[in-house]
Image 1 (cartoon, rainbow, N blue to C red):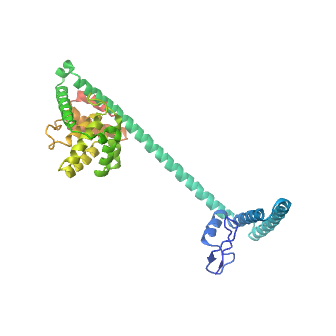
Image 2 (cartoon, one colour):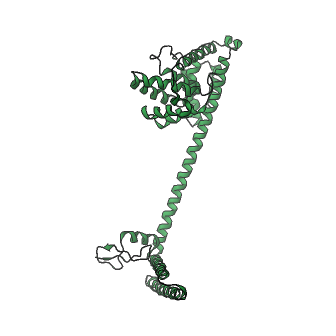
Image 3 (tube, one colour):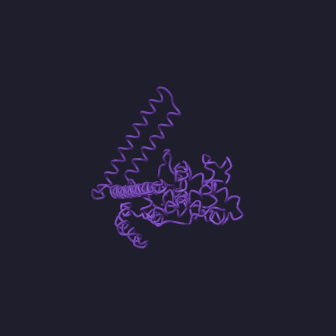
Length: 345
């Protein structure tokens, strides 16, 4: 066993004892350093560390002219030692057939860093691609929601000529009115001041107590803070309904079951339009709170909900093919399919 010949960053010799009898033994840390820079460079670097340490000691021991003299002598000693080391390295290089002993170590470290830079670049490009895909997906979803909201506004607005000509729209208008009455019923549930929207206490408790997934929590918080006016029932209607639903659940003898239902509904809400999200919130209390029943759905609503999920498909051709299958399954007339397919582009 012998003491490591390596020099620590402070300029003092390493105190680690190396097992085995080898010339110029080094501990694991100093061996790793040598493998990075090579046997010649590490001796140069360690000589510089010793010189720096000696200068610090001189600064602590001398002042004035004596300090300047001591520093000059130390610098001369360092340069002399460095010159001797370079001569020794030149001799070793010549004995090695002119091959620099540092070369394989430096090349290996350079290759390692090149591979690391390539890995980081690939990871960055992958993140950028994922981000671009998410932005495109969100843009498709927003465009689809805007189309759906426009249709819902038309249907709820009482355009009699259009409603009379389209039996499906008549049914949609009836459903909208039913949902609005259900929302009004849910809003009769008293919400304490500490659970009002601006406190964010309701979604915080739901995330923890219902153990929402990250995606469900993100969707819920986005809708809760969006301040949307859905079905012309006032801004922030989603948040107000969720506040009331949560208060009912907290005081219900069936709280455990309702929390499970809430978690499922919030998960199923991912990718749905604002109207669908609001309807599903109310539907949580269906069968528990008198006057809550939002199960009736028109064909347009069914298509809208199922098409919302398709917006998560990034490949345009796959998205369109899936949309065609849904329209065929629901027996949508050919002349009406163009509008729905356009919404997926």
